[in-house]
Length: 312
Image 1 (cartoon, rainbow, N blue to C red):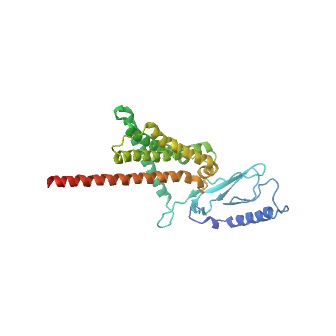
Image 2: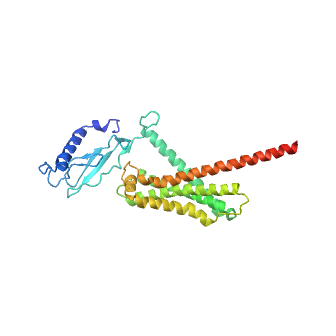
Image 3: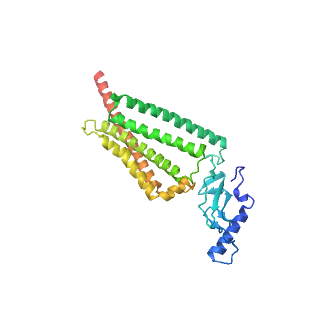
């Protein structure tokens, strides 16, 4: 859809260009018809699974309105572009300027740009406040050495994860939304923040798991002399997330580049390599919480009964 809400399929020349492209594709490629009228040196008509790109002169860039819906994602405007080089070869189409429409889940209508700006501002306020509080908390732990123990070591690492996570979000937001740096042309500036953002998100969840695990053992096994070491906490909190994210990137790096940097809406299938451990960690923490509540409630009942007997 364009900015006025009109479906791009109704835009002038859109249907004609699709028909022309499909006919050229069938005649020139499927049937190998060498007599098909394509100018020498021009980029041939091509379908990239999203748009039909008609024959184009060399050293030129063409643009097309973003499709109304692709991979179940509706678009509210913007244009896709593709460059034909001097040798008559197509480059990879750029869809980074296609703007997904934000839909209201209840009404199905598009949310206005003003609402999007308000949501964006609220995100900035939330991330900024969280970052400031996180830095202050880390400063307290670092300045007052008397507070340093295993439990506060875990607290510090958890706060550090989410503080860096917030800073990366704000830096990425400035680069790609305020400065409007092109993701497609700056793979390093795109993939490094994406990698770090995912890593610190997963690491934060694993440090939450370490917190829950320590509390669980302290409550359930109060008389057990088993104590966790700093190395064990670092292994769970930092090393495991690094391993998970590294496997994810190495296994599915091309799809990640397309999804994070080229504007593709097709999420990498191997994202489950990251999602499954995170879900398991959240379920484990929930199980710890239920077990701790059960122990506390049981202990309270015993205490209340003893008090009743004493007063009787």
